Image (tube, rainbow, N blue to C red; front, side, top):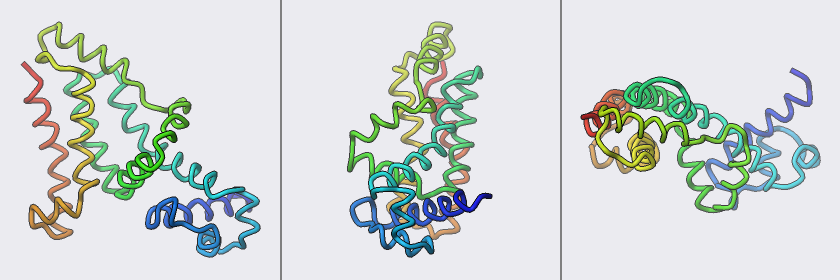
Length: 201
């Protein structure tokens, strides 16, 4: 890895940690530079402002998540197979990157206009193929009549919430960290079965 690539990697890692814990407004460039082990002048050489650095970190975080969404939307498998694969893959992915849902949702709520920049990215999820396939399977008698947008949001919500609301889920279900991990693992099949049973004829 080249020296410049190493420095930028250190900056993005440090910024990710600090933005995660303090958010955009609470983060300080000096703190990020200190954590990355560089001086503030070098940090500004790579990123002229905190906003530009934040956008780089956010886009990187979103780019990890977007392929998980695109899989369910754009492959040629049935809706049932899409639901099962998405639920399994997304849950496994989030167990490795548990900070992502809170980070993304908190910052989108803080700055709703930022989603417009993300939509310009070629990897931004597109629902059109998924919606057309849902309608095709409804006409073929495979699925009950259901709005495709509602179905996709249901899939997202049921998969995201245990990570987004982890402290609440643990408190309500009286689970420690170990039993919570087992609970989330079981949702790979529980959520898929729940959705499929609700939409199939």
